[in-house]
Length: 274
Ligand SMILES: C[S@@+](CC[C@H](N)C(=O)[O-])C[C@H]1O[C@@H](n2cnc3c(N)ncnc32)[C@H](O)[C@@H]1O
Image (cartoon, rainbow, N blue to C red; front, top):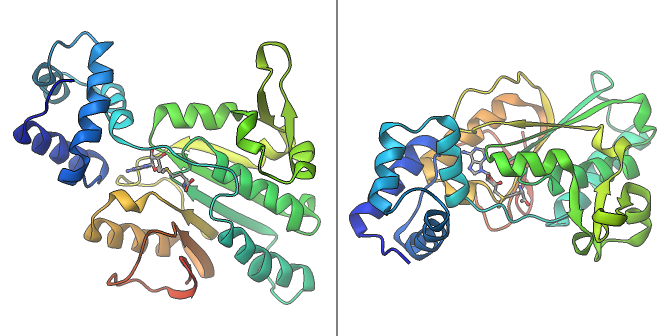
């Protein structure tokens, strides 16, 4: 494994901060070292320095995104952190079904920001199909974005190892997934009607956003964990600008908004309302 010198690590950390808002603490040095070693072993670069030199002199956006994939973590799963889905069922779908909430129109927009390989937005789509009364009568869409090229491609393909749905209720699996056969044996694919509810796009959360909102629900879970406090504060305020009054923001259960100045009230663990 090529050892990274503290100076090289500092340099890598400064690029990650500048391009993507990632805060790489010294504790990440071994992880970065391991991943960089794997990448360099199958790359034309013969040293860490020559790769870093390339990144700062001749790299284009696509090259930089390869570097992003080396540094970032895409871990995700279906119906991860179930409490947010339970909250939506209780406080969003049930009041809608009872007529206790009236929305200004039949338009409902969710955003899964930092969607990784798509388990989160597809879980939201399945959950909506289960709990939104007469789904077809609503203009219901989920926007799913991530910066990682490989994650976005996987989300668009919507194909997963069958093991990833093993712990789900099997009625749900039958209803919303297709089992692969032949070369695709052992894989499942999200069913077309569920995929149709989700639009997937590449987006760097640190850059300008083309969407205008308003969103009813934003999930940004296990993404801000990599950002420092000022970056989180800026980002969450931008989410607030796009949330409608009464809109919901869910963050990862190991993340916090404490000490951050945002127009949100906490309504449940890691769940906020504008
Ligand atoms: C650990 S995954 C979380 C996936 C999903 N939200 C969940 O909780 O299961 C974090 C994701 O954030 C994305 N990410 C990190 N920094 C980003 C940025 N600046 N812009 C867009 N996506 C980013 C990564 O590519 C990764 O897919």
